[in-house]
Image 1 (cartoon, one colour):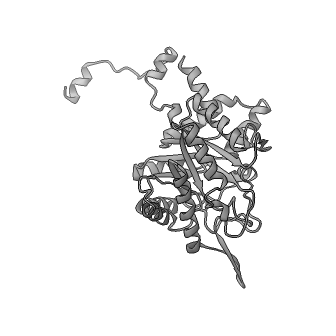
Image 2 (cartoon, rainbow, N blue to C red):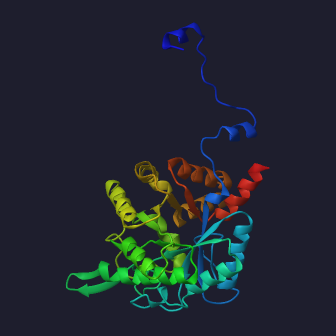
Image 3 (cartoon, rainbow, N blue to C red):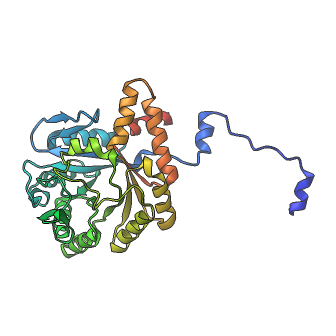
Length: 337
């Protein structure tokens, strides 16, 4: 039919589909499902330990036995993956527990893969939790003050990633933002015969005020200075795209934007420009603000959480890393009934 023929017909205004919930689901452009979820978990030495994180209601530092219970419970409601952060028994200036064969994360990985083989286990690869000073890299002090040593740090990050993969991690996730760390980790994994271990790079990780509660949970606050010399400035979008491009070139299989909700523009541009599998991390501050407002009766926790995650999906996220993952999986099951 040619364009002129359209004039023979009345013009109807498009209408919103206001029918049943089933109809709305049928025509939904953006969907959430439990298979997109990753649950971050914090593990430390001990037994029967569930130490609450005061600034993150419902989140705990867990001993390996309790970690297993938490992971199993989440997996049973449909969460397919966990992201592990370790809290070592001792810290030093070389983060030696980060790459120790029997370090806390390595032990946790072996336990989870033995007891829950179908659970996808991702490990955060960073040194800040293991460093006595709380920074993500080796530090040197001279007349100019303390500074992070980028290249020597890469060797320790690569050792950590290899040790996690050797313990059975399905995926390693470097979060340090040192230049060249993806290439260093990829090379080390390949040399160790772990060439099929994928890398999920924290590719655009911003120096954000939203990380406060996490630093309590991971006991990783810097003892001096801040992380602005190696994490990204919130002012820079083009730089974020360059960082993502570099990580892809160095061998990243999945790229991540962190934080999530305050950086939807970055998330959208990363997905649109590169088309790579893209993760978004709904960070501790985002989670805690929703929890606090809900506790005061100011918002509906379930509705706001789901709406926030839908925003990440609309912006391009394929993978949703969220502390609310078990609740979201349950809510999705309820909605499907």
